[in-house]
Length: 118
Image (cartoon, rainbow, N blue to C red; front, side, top):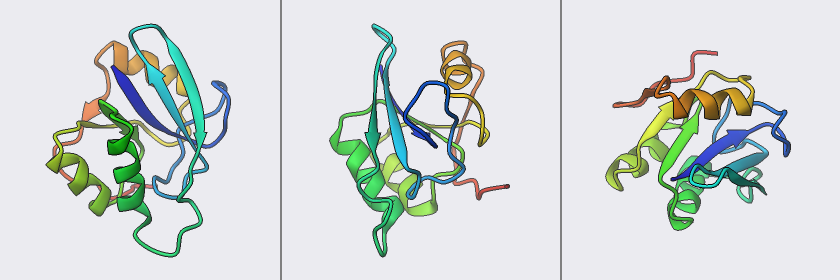
């Protein structure tokens, strides 16, 4: 299963970013073999439609699951339309802890858009 996780850095010691469309990196984590790569967010400095652009970027990568603190309403809508589940992880949670929580079924799957709670 290919996970798409927002990140504030390009190392496994970093954390979930509080944003979605403007986060600096994405962690692409493959649960089948524990392989991963970090990708620089190509849309983080875009002028508009950033969340939707990032969502389409993720969809085009054939990801299976999104894990983020708060994907925006447009991104969430695109994921919902393509039946890609979105899971909430609190901002600033270590990436390793997020992956572990996902694998233990401890993360909450969002059924509707959840505005960022800061």
